[in-house]
Amino acid sequence: RMKQLLLSILLVSTSFIHSQYCMLAGPTSLVDSNVKSVQMTGVLGTISYLGCPGVIGVQDLTGQNVTLNAGGTYSLSVEFGTCGGNYVGVGQVWIDYDQNGVYDASEFTALGSGNGEDVVGNVQIPSTALFGNTKMRVRIRYNLALTAADACLGYLYGETEDYKVTIVCGPPVFASQPASQTVQCGLSAVFSVVAQGSSATYQWEQRPGPAATWTSISDGPLYSGTTTDTL
Image (cartoon, rainbow, N blue to C red):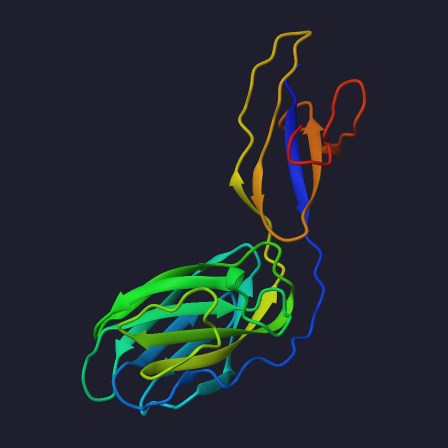
């Protein structure tokens, strides 16, 4: 008989607190390259910043908060320019995913360069990101890119801004569904999925027909891997 299989995923959420960040970074001049605007929309809240005048050092904008799902991808739009003219700027962003109070090189996303225009980049939130409040740093530097290790580097022209970000347990999302298969008696088949989410657990289920009730299956003579992503 034909049976149908179902995989369910359970995500578990916890909370964490972050510590202090380097606040002596950023530009030493108010002129030339600045961030004119920052836009980011999450599952809750929106960052919507309009710049000018420029700020020396790190600008604390943690009064603006956006909530993002672990495992999700979000668009970040940054307008490069100045408060009086247009100069080439190169943008970068860091999010403290492990909440250790440091913008690590592994938490870096390059945004590209622009001259008086919006530059849009995609920020991928790791499924392993800790849940709770943390910080995002957006930086622009005149004409020169910052490396992944430069979250705290001082420079002459540009801007550095810190925002509040809340990471939450995102709903389970299948990036790849298991493919249907026809199997002859006595032979085996392998079903697998690719799922996005945090701290995921897996459970395969089966039902003998479309009108039947789904029931969990367990490892045994017929099945193996019933609590993994591959059955």
